[in-house]
Length: 323
Length: 262
Ligand SMILES: Nc1ncnc2c1ncn2[C@@H]1O[C@H](COP(=O)(O)OP(=O)(O)OP(=O)(O)O)[C@@H](O)[C@H]1O
Ligand SMILES: [Mg+2]
Image 1: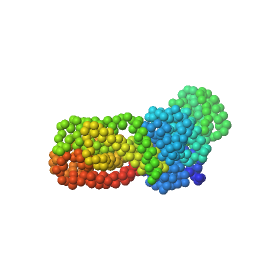
Image 2: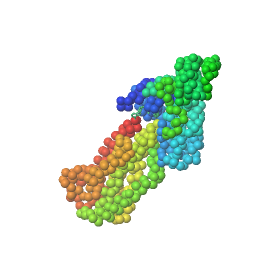
Image 3: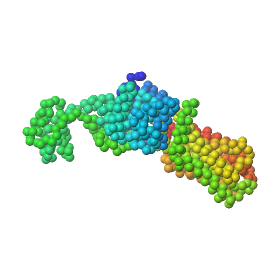
Image 4: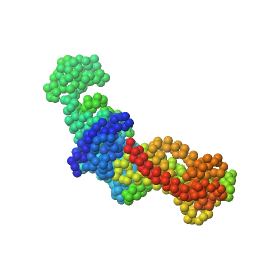
């Protein structure tokens, strides 16, 4: 196995007059997880499709598991598993039949395919539903079946395009666990997501894509450091004191504090250290401001996202609805 | 090559399961053709006259051919369905033979239409249809029908890949059926047509297949027409269908690469 499992250089792809990818460079060391983050339409799916040999790039070069995706696609396919953004399962077949079919097409043989299907049905808690038609499955069950299908042939590189969209918390945890198990077993994972929390949790490195280019790359901590120090968040008890509180805090903060009128909250970037925090607390008390909440937090990936792309990622709570 | 055969079989198995899961499909390929045979045999059979032959015998080749033609719609719907549910993407990410996706589709749809053929032959025989020239000639007629069916499956797959939308594909398949079936000798002899229309109908490959079957099964009646395709229907059908397949298969394979790589 090479040290680098996925290597992309200057990938470009154009749809009509829309430049979906404008030169993507990625390098994913073997046995690690790369999280690809980006707003809708950033080009995440397009990049994954090129790396998984489904789509030819207009320009650029990509090597996956040691093989060039354009020159040796069939060899790449032997090494990869792909779970697309939308579950690709046969509605009319049962869950087991779906897996056995994919196993056969992976040339595992009838017996091999059956045994492997059984194993994965168990792992993804689909045994009870195994002999039911997939059209009776819930969205989450479909997703799990889709993931099982892409693990059938024990791939060395996994592409997961928004794997947890539409999953409930339990299923999401199961998936996270599976991804980690795969990585422990030496598998390289490239996953796209809109859940910043997910990337933070799973990814060794994160690439933020916007408008078809990589605008930032690094470990989650690198990216957070880019946004700068810690943040002090103060919620005042009465709205009328908001302006006064902001004035007081601006003396201890680095730069202007940001005021969220609706939430009665002020957030200010501060230098690390207990002194600044104490100063802030004392200043608020001396000004006689009623404080409802006083918190210090590290910048989240949401802050990273916001500052890099100029627009917020999908808020974590509202993502259940999309399939 | 063995990989291609293996993948094709796996996918054919998948399609056969579909038929078992969707009873409407099974009814479509069995009851539909039976109704056709009965309606044409009894209803029109008593009203139509074709010199030298019983209309009930004459019509069978036409019905067989029409059912073979309808494979266009079946294959088209199957292919566009797979494009929509993402399975084509899954297949393309597997180290399988790409051609098997198309071959699996066309072969299984051909098996379905063959089932229709068997059912129709039995019902036809029950209401008095016979192939009078012996087993070999009868089989030759069916072989030709299967060749037509196979060609139509490929045409359908091509349409499905190019048009993509499942609804649009259905109406196009229907639209295609009209001129090919009704501008042929499937249901009526061509003698009554204006001369120019008759020439078109004579060269319609559907007419050649129908005429071949009637010839091979001795269901033809009197042939007064001495146009080349009417005189040599078997030769003409083999050549036209063969050429059509040779053109359609690579065209469809290319359309598959394009449709999937979007
Ligand atoms: N087949 C296609 N034809 C035309 N344009 C396309 C096609 N596929 C994608 N695009 C366009 O390319 C851009 C990138 O699309 P892509 O699907 O890669 O985005 P994404 O980052 O995966 O977005 P999302 O988060 O919504 O899944 C979008 O503007 C999209 O409209
Ligand atoms: Mg996407």
